[in-house]
Amino acid sequence: MARLKQTYPADGFFAIGIFNNKEQVNLGTLWRSAYILGASFIFTVGSKYKKQGTDVVNAWQKIPLFHYRDMDDLITHLPYDTRLVGVELDDKAIDMIDYQHPFRCVYLLGNEQSGLPSEALARCHELVKLPGNYSLNVSVAGSIVLYDRLAKQ
Ligand SMILES: C[S@@+](CC[C@H](N)C(=O)[O-])C[C@H]1O[C@@H](n2cnc3c(N)ncnc32)[C@H](O)[C@@H]1O
Image (tube, rainbow, N blue to C red):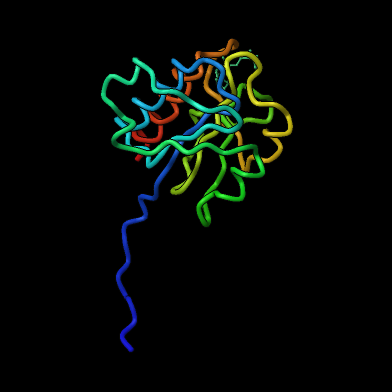
């Protein structure tokens, strides 16, 4: 029997989502950025999402949104050999300037009010942070992370 010998460029894929999202408008903005910057899907952990006016490019028609019940559900459904990257202003996080993005990864952001809780941070394979002493808006932070990935390719 013939064996499949093809190999493919190691560009990988990525997705981005928010833990316990509070402001629906931010998820709509992030969905739009994620689609434009090349994400394969977006997701929420904990909370659900209703379509927003901020998604003016109708990104919901282009890349899917998945809902995970909790961190266990997210981790159970992580694609094979894919890193979970927590994005948080945390002492243990690597500075984005020095960060090499994994070929295959899922970026996890915290919500507007409380950020990523310690239980979620502990489940991530790695943590990255953006410059600054104060938190950015969650959809702004997510968009910068995706731009950084593209810029380093
Ligand atoms: C508005 S912030 C959360 C602020 C929250 N009040 C706190 O003190 O943790 C929402 C999310 O955006 C992301 N974020 C904002 N600024 C960031 C930064 N400088 N580095 C990494 N992530 C950031 C994180 O995922 C964060 O959980």
